Image 1: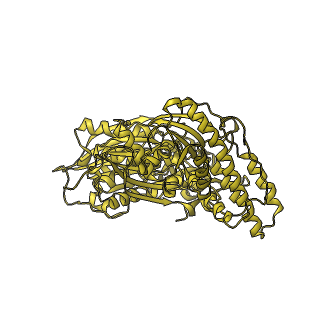
Image 2 (image 1 turned 90 degrees about the vertical axis):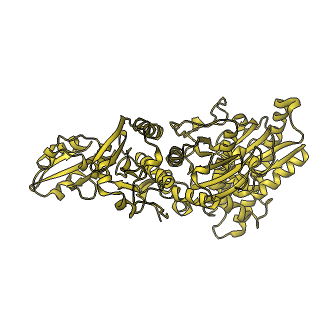
Length: 369
Length: 247
C-alpha cells in the first residue's frame, strides 16, 4: 500500500459554461495536491450568441457530466470508494447547470455513502490560492469574474466580510461587452487581452469610475459607455484603433482595480488591527484574475503597500472543479458536510450580512449574457 | 462511456434489483422492485411538488432503500423517465440515474414519459382498433407533448393531433388529458378522458425495466433528456429564438 493522504475529494463545477471535475488531496490546509483536473468548455454552444445561454448550458452539462467525472477519476487513478468526500458547486450561478452538478454529486455520495459538500462557488474561488500556496488566514481577496466583483476580508473558512462590491457591472462583464463592441468575439477576457498587446494604452482617455472615491466599491457601466462612444468613432477595419482601445480599456480597469485595492488594504488593516499580517496577502481570484496585465498591475500596487499579491495559476482562476474540490476538502477537514436534501441556490452571497447593491437594477448573479 | 457492467447475475444474489425515478412533472416519485420469477415492488414513494425535486429526490431514494433494507450497491439497474416534461425535472432525473449508474457501474433504462403513462394505462382505457389511446402532457405553453398508442412522443397542437387521428376516436391519459379532450371535441373529434391515473407510476416503470431485462439496457447508450423543444434564446437586439445543442 502506498501513502494515502488524509483526505481525497472530488469536486464538480457546472454553474456557468464549463463542465468540470477534479480530484484533490491533502493532509491539512493550506496546500494540497491536484490529482486530476478536467474542464470541458461549451464555447461552441454559446459563442454563436455572444454570451452564455442558460438553458443550453444546462442541456450541455447533463450530457457530459458523467463522462467528465469518470475521466477525472481515471486520471486520478481512483475508484469512487477511495474518495473521502464529493463536492459540487451549490450556487450561486445558472441554476439549471448547478442542479445538474449537485444531483450528480449527490448520486455519487448516495452510491458510496461518502459525505456530500455543497460548495459556494465564490468560496471556491476565494480559497483556491490555498490549494497551491501556503496562504494563511486572514487575507484580502479581490474576486473578479464575469458575474462578480468584490473585495472581501477572509478570516477563515466560511468567514467573509465584504468590504466593497460593484454597484453595476462585474468587471468580467465589462470585458465581455468591450470585446463585443470591438468585434473581438466571445469570451471577451482573453480576446481583449490579446488585442491589447499590440495597442497603445495611452491613446484614449477613458473615465475611471469610483477612482479616488472613499471606500472600495466599483462601477464599470460608465466605462462601458465610454468604450462604446470611442468604438463608434473607429472604423471596423481599423485594427490598430481597436487594439489601442482594448489596451486603454485594460489599462483603465487596471488603474481602477489598483485604486480600489489600495483603499481596501487600508480598510482591511483597520478591521484587523494588530492581527493584520505583514505583508498583507492580496489574493486575486476569478476568471479576470487570469489576465496577465492586471496581475502585473496589482503586483506593482502590492509592492508599494506592504502587501504581496497571491494569484493562482490562470487555469485555476477560470471556473474549474479543482477549486470546488479544494473548498470541499477545507470544509471536510473542519468536520463539515451537507445533507443530501441540499437545495441548489441561484443566489448565495459570501457575506450573508452584506446588503444587495445591484438588486434594484435587475442585474442578478444568475444571468451572464 | 466505457461500460464495465457485469450483467450475468444479480449483485444481491437471487433477484434482479432496480431503482425507478420520475421527476418529469409536478411529482417526485421513486420505486424499488426486484425480479425473481415475478416482479415484486418493495418500496414506492411519491410526493406532489411543482418545484424542489432537486432537494427532495435523494432523501426519497435513501428512505426507500432504508425501508427495504437494501444498499445502493445491491442495485443492478436504474430506470428513469427522460421526458418530455419539465426541462429541469427531466435533467434532475437523468443526472441522478446517470450519476448512480456511473458510480455503481450499472446500466440505465431510459423511458419516455409518454411510454411511462402507457405502462400505467388501465385495461378499460385500452380501446379497440377504431380508437386511439393518447398520452397527453401539459407543456406549459399552448401545445402539448403527446403520443399515440405507444408511438414516439411529439409536441403539437390539438389540431395537429386531430389530423394524425383521422377518423379514430381518442381516449386521453396524462395531466393534459382533460384540457386536450375539450380542445379535440371543439374540433369535432370524439375524445374522452380515460380512467387511468394521470400520473406516472414509478412501480410500473420499475417493473417494465426489469421485464425487458438488465442485458437489454446494458446494450444501449446512457439515456439523454428528450426535450422536444429548443432552448429559448434572447439575442443581443432583444429578438427571441430557439436553439439546440450544436454537438
